[in-house]
Image (cartoon, rainbow, N blue to C red; front, side, top):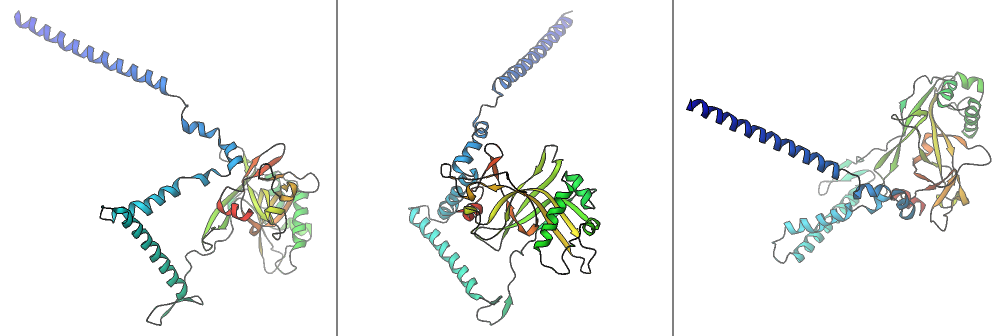
Length: 349
């Protein structure tokens, strides 16, 4: 009898401990859920930054120009590396000496490399052996990508992009009249143009020379989807820079003009022996307001839709020199963000 009572007491004790542990676990879960509900909000600094981006770009230019990366890298290269190689005792002079020595050696090596190059070859010192120089980066080409379906003729391409066929034909004929007359030229007869095979594309890769190292290129990818959605969002027809003439044109834009990119196409001239392929871009020119000169109060260049005359042009894809960024400002007007990168800033200023 005593053993049975002891077992019942132990059973009740274990059950009580288990019940208490379950209650404590439930209470902890409830406290955690309540804390998440009270603290789960968007009132933190990174979300506040988003509301200031548009006004910041209008007033100060590209946000990326104010990155702290340069200062952090300078702190590492100029101070931390020198301190690690110092004796850790009165290290200031040793850090300065180390950084100065690194700069002098770097300049010396670049000078030796520059003077050793003669007519495309490198002369190996003390040997007289000459080796041809190999560029670090070959000059890239403009590349069309994203072939569109059901665009084998001009009519089908215009239907897919919702562009009037007569407007497209008129601009192609204008482009043909401006090109040199040779066996590679497209036929100037609209009936023959209608028979030529056409391919439509949705992306153009544009090689843009680096600001300081002109033998290196950055690739800008401009997209044009016509009226079709891009990645389950609205249609995308990027803004690009078009080189239209000398630096005396369009004021501070120096011969460049901003345009929308509604179509990319490739036409093969199968009617000629050369069977030349022409890679073309249909652009909508945005008219530079005030002749392309800076708007004095805002220190920005403004562009807008053309009021008089056609705004569409057919150009070779080589005339597209890079992507442009414009910010809406008023009715059918935009501000050209000339501080989006250092190259654009340098070209305009």
